[in-house]
Each structure stands twice: as structure tokens, then as C-alpha cells.
Length: 79
Image 1 (cartoon, rainbow, N blue to C red):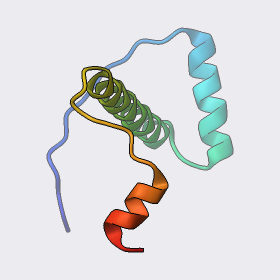
Image 2 (cartoon, rainbow, N blue to C red):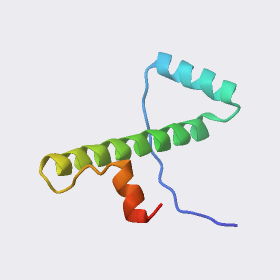
Image 3 (cartoon, rainbow, N blue to C red):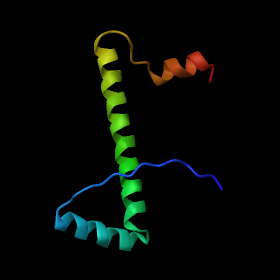
């Protein structure tokens, strides 16, 4: 069995958020801890995507990168 080290996070939320968490985790058929882990992972992935997009836009604006058309990509890859 693969045992990974983990850390504990304590979080205080309003009662209405807790009730919504309870309801959604039950509807999803998973416990609240697993539901929160999945939600946190999805949120962090979205934020990473956001920051990568901002960085790409900054590179584009500053001339460190350029937009390439699909036709140029096909030509480069000999497709």
C-alpha cells in the first residue's frame, strides 16, 4: 500500500457554507473531506491555468512570444 505524507488544514466556514457542503457531498456520494479535496484541486488547477494565461499574454505584449496561425503550424509540422 502506498502511504503518502499528508498535512491537516483546519477551516472555519459559515453555517450556510457548511450546509451547502454537506448537501453537495451527499448528492455526490462522497464524504465532505474528499469533496473538499477535489474542489480544492480543481480550483488550484484553474488558478494555475489563469496565471499561465496571464504570463502568456504578458509575453505576447512584451514581444517575447508571437501568435502563430494554424496554417503556419501545419506548414512547420508538414501536416
